[in-house]
Image (cartoon, rainbow, N blue to C red; front, side, top):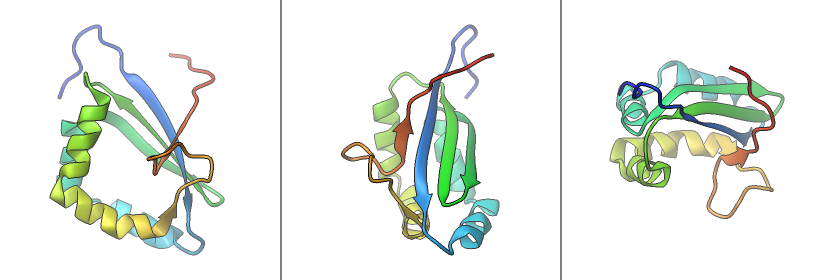
Length: 115
């Protein structure tokens, strides 16, 4: 999916906690992320996706190039391969206490951006 000329993406930053002692396993899985999961991420309009780690927190950043974020996230969540991936990864994570209802990864507020 190539971004349309002149279109700007929506940027998302999210945060999640990593369960103690799970960093090496989390990294091991992500070094060998399943190609079908990566393809679904791309089909759902997510580009420039990164996950960072510091202390016991994971921070993700991605750009959304689609037209309906909620619909694309529902499509991703309905994908059987993605569901199997999440079944492997989610036990290594725990959501932050301040997340909104229904969130796993809690959205962060962007306070600064410079191109």
